[in-house]
Length: 259
Image 1: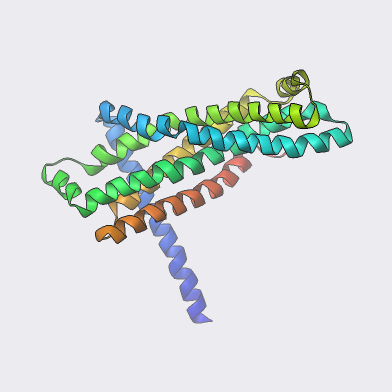
Image 2 (image 1 turned 90 degrees about the horizontal axis):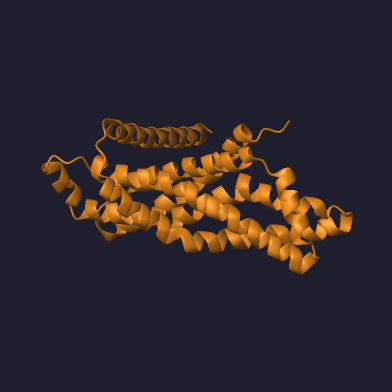
């Protein structure tokens, strides 16, 4: 019994230690940002790689999610005679939950893994040590541009997800349940509020910051050799996904309280 509690205690302390380390990485990054020591050329390059290049897969993922939600909701609405809420239901689901969460998961899988692999490779090949020898901060040179890039691109990607997910839902509602587009869009105007969209974008920003920090931290603490890079890449995706799901619930409690 004592061994069990020791095991639990060690894991809890390990989680707290990890969260503290990631938080300190955030603090150090913010110090460089507030000083104005930002390489904007690197930020723009990272925005193109992490954001623009992720647009297609993000749109495909969230569009199909909106189509599935509409497919299930439309037929139930037709059975109970409440087709005038389908559009609003799909749009609210996309804005509040699916668009920010699925966008973040896709970005974590594509961009987060790339960040961890790139920085991890630099760590293994001692490029980060070379930066330190030249008095260049790895946090300023590597972490800050990627953090700012995801902070800037995540709300844009999330907004695209909301729009295309809702459009996909409208098409499915019309083709599978014969719900006119006019009723679908009128339902959106009645049920969806601006705060839903803004809070969903806020979720995207927070998820983007988490993915960037976790991926950069895993890369900076990569073990030796190719196995270390692979382990860091896998860990960045797994930990980022856990962060997204846990914080999605906490943020939903805060941003969308049940009244």
